[in-house]
Figure 1: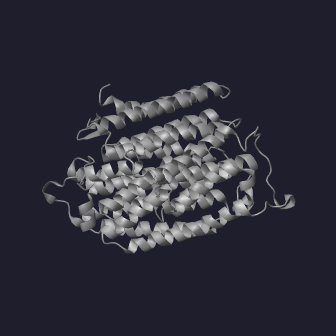
Figure 2: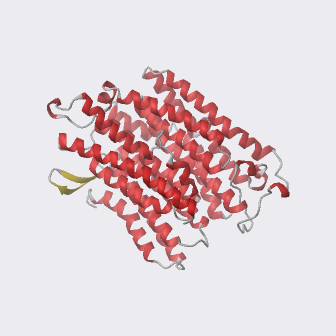
Figure 3: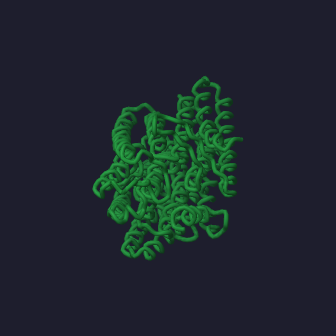
Length: 501
């Protein structure tokens, strides 16, 4: 296959699947399932080919002229493949989960059609080789996820959708302004390690700071940086597979990925440090980490607690990038994968509880470990990983972030990481104690109500098996972090090959 066509094929795999699914009748569930799974498996195969080729030093680039001096550019570099691989693997797993979760629900063709288009937009964000292409797919991601947020069609869902659009389109406007401004000054917004070249040094420090602010605030909305995070808790009205997609695969990860791209491949990390862009961004990330954890403590609705946990945890990626050192960047990049695995586990577990027992609040979870032990084992592993206990993947991320803080001379950020872990423990450990060691509520006080016909298992296998798979992956990513094929090894390759040689 032509080297430029392989990235295009990765995009078209899910995009064409979405179009086909839209054309299917609602009752054609077997055909819809077949299209979903075939496309997800094919995308995984194509991403595997890209990974193998990049490891062997091949270049995969596709250029499409857009206007004079501007082009759409798809390019597979190591950073792109870190994000792309995560989205491809978790798309397959989330598809299986969503098939089980939405069994018998209305409007499944609409849901899976937009679901596939959303994954295609995410792949475009990952493979974008310049700022214009990134902007295009970043906004397509907004448009394809909005129907998923409002999927249930209730008044609450529609209100959440309005808030979601207001925030994300506002962020997109800032990103557009920054992109146009930079393009008019330099004529090219190609992603290059070290940042965009400024011919003759004509761009003033104040102009660079203003452009960087527009770009970083633009992607900061999807990255849920405080105070741009308000859309995320409200979006939890969406079905559990959508919540998993927003938090672990697509939207917030696209925002965090954009922060890294802009900081290292547009502004350039040396320029960002010299102009105090990176230090200010690190302070904003640290504030978000603490604020998200404090708000999570207050939440009694399980999905909202997990949502504020995401606000906190995703900012580890931004903090690692903004500390401007190799070890910190490794910690931030590997957390992009590790947080995805842990967070999707938690949302799958929340979905299992809601779908099987009608459990939605923290108070209803008393003793639920006796009724759904495998689901709650997965929840426990992911929660301990979020706290940062070894040998889970979250420990590896925080270890490298801490080492990176010392390496870069920012030991104060260790206090932020430590306080965050304490707060993580404060909103997860009492919940785990209640799940495993407290007796269930009496019937008259809200005992679980069976919702799903289970057969011989604690819940449907299409819900249980994906949950156990991602929980095991989060455990193995920590246990085998030192191996050559781990996410940590790939993050190290990115940092050593591209940014800190």
